[in-house]
Image 1 (cartoon, helix red, strand yellow):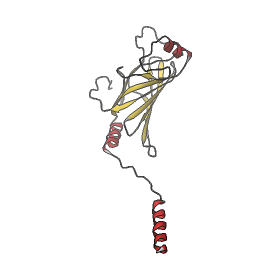
Image 2 (cartoon, one colour; image 1 turned 135 degrees about the horizontal axis):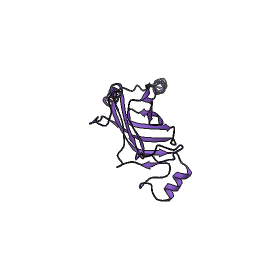
Image 3 (cartoon, one colour; image 1 turned 60 degrees about the vertical axis):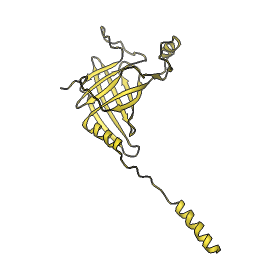
Image 4 (cartoon, one colour; image 1 turned 45 degrees about the vertical axis):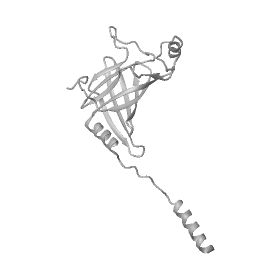
Length: 189
């Protein structure tokens, strides 16, 4: 009887201790994301913006100019129209910007944010199989200002956009990717 109990307990322990490697099966959502990235047909709307915390941002926060629920290092964009669209070889960006301008911009420009329509330079897509995410890197130039953009797309359709500018402080946006209904904002050449 003791031998039978010993065998059952030992067998249970051995079965419970076996290595269990979790295999993630691709689902319809991740397959759709993969297809959008491959076809270069997707759009991103950001819900949060993360500017670099500087003395100027503290002054803006102290003056009460930030949207409700925001702080100097995280600004709520819900209800604020913004987008980054990729359609074929073209990209359209219209994102708000809070931060500091490091170099003087062009005169007569009424654009207060990061705005671009056209074809990017050095468009590169990589996929990290282990972390199940895609990274898209490209450069765009708007007049004398240039931007280096890094987009990270996650299987749950969450996104991070990091923008490094030649004239502005760095900024990051968090949002979601979706299939665009209208591609009229994108220039195709």
